[in-house]
Length: 583
Image (cartoon, rainbow, N blue to C red; front, side, top):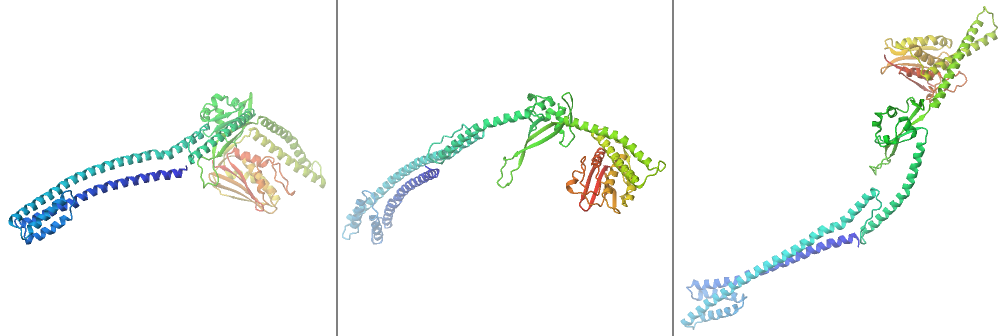
């Protein structure tokens, strides 16, 4: 039977009970009303009639004459029509006979006196009969009222018990299966797939119970089939992580250690018992290396760690793991937001690469240093060849000497840049930082390039205020950076053009900039301009440099806590800038 049908039958039963109770109540009230009406309607009128007939007699001192006999006769006729009690009819007939006898004209006085006595006697009899009837009927009405009250009380009690039982039990018919279903769903949510629902019958609840049990079986089968697979995958992943050469540390969203492999345990000097499930913040308070790992950023320099009985270098990477957030689903949301599930820290051992890089740097420094001496000798020899006291050269010889001199100067510049780069890479860069005026730096740089600008007929325009605050800088190194900017600008500027040098104060920094009006640099090259050995492709009209000048300039400015950048657009020229903090 369907739930809808059961509900209809239940409420129909309630309706029927209410109808029955109302019918019984109306019947009993009607009985009480009928008995009460009988008392008032019948006997009371008879008593009134008797009283009126006595009153008619009393008006004429107990006799009947033409004045009161007519009234007496009218009342007697009403009484004859209102005979209700046993014996009352005989009394009324006798009263009528006595009345007629009294009113007879030929009756003697003795007969009239006897008739009057009979009239009074019959009036008393009628009065007594009706009084007794009133008492009797009143008793009957009282008993009927008590009986009706009893029946109504019994009916009300039975109806109350039926309704109370219905109220108590019928909601359970709906609530109990729902409670069982809720309990079953709670067990399923706790992965208790053995939970089953037992609902008898053929209604929707039994169908729902069958569907629930089938779902539990399917979930159990799915869970059993996936647990083994998940365990296998977990073991495989753990094995891979454990045997990786990089140190790997995994934290959950509460900053608790989930896992760390063998290399991480050795570096951090921790074991699984000490670390797994513990707060990484608390562990880092007693572990300096872990504190450095948690506090470091991925764009910082490699971490230097003493490992494998030597100084080793590790590059730190950290990845935040995000998963879809299904805790608060919203139908209006188009894209499901993610939430953090934790972080993974990876320490990549780059010691071998660092050693190779140092070897390369040392080799470059050695070669550059060794090349610098013969190049200086070649330059000196070229200067002697240009001296006429040694001898004169023809035009072709002079051109050859000029080319050799240019190439020697270019090689000497490259060797100087390589030596500066070696100092930066080995950490041996020595800066003589003092408080100096920005104009002093600009003046030194302009003195170096002014002759080259005159030869190329290029105007150098300086825009600056006279009262700029001092900066903390190495004057020679900073001037070298500005010279490098100016040299590049001169190289890519046309004759009779202009180069603008600007020095301004901006946000607690002194900003130096060199603006040319050449063809500009494409955006794809701008991002790599300050990388080592990177050269912008040329059209063959300009000689490209070594690709080290801007890289070294970046290291010099960074060592002075400054910033360096470029602004350029095709056809609008280029603007190279760096800024130094105010002293």
